Length: 95
Image (tube, rainbow, N blue to C red):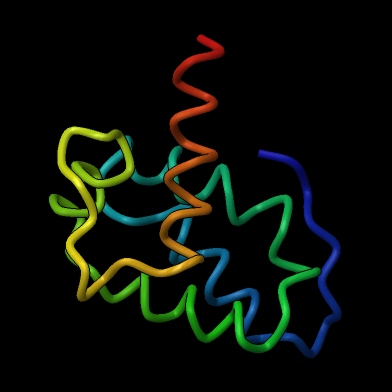
């Protein structure tokens, strides 16, 4: 994953980047981390909050939603999760 330039005092974004790339399953590390790493420095505060909410979701469900095995349920459907899924599916199609 590309190196990200974050301000030294931006611990919130550093923590999110770490969580995105260390989910516990290799598949989610690649899918979520692959989306977050190149974008974390430029996310708006609202997007950071949305990403924090995504990070709280269980790995198994995230993997199913991000790979298209299952649809994202309405209670979790939002722009951030849809963007991560679109990036994951476009990466999958490119392989």
